[in-house]
Image 1 (cartoon, rainbow, N blue to C red):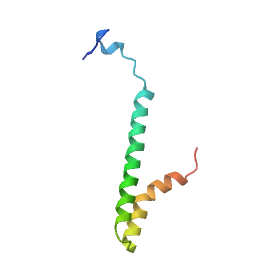
Image 2: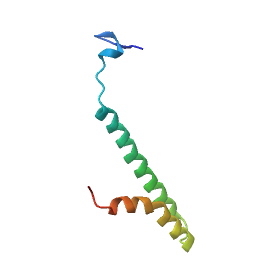
Image 3: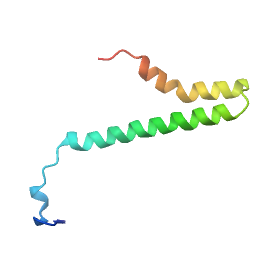
Image 4: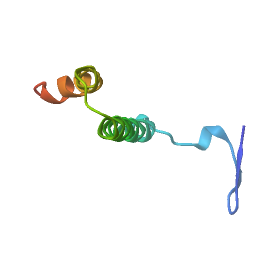
Length: 75
């Protein structure tokens, strides 16, 4: 498999220099984006409806893993 570049022409796979950190950063950014979207959607839906006790429990259940992760001490 080769990708064509305007100046270099086609480059062989062996010439690519891909590091693990280069692949991990976009994956981490995607996770941050997904987490932010879930917070926005959950908060928006919670604010538009009446607030019965079952909704409060559902909101706490949705954010429980996030709260646990944020409150754990860093290593």
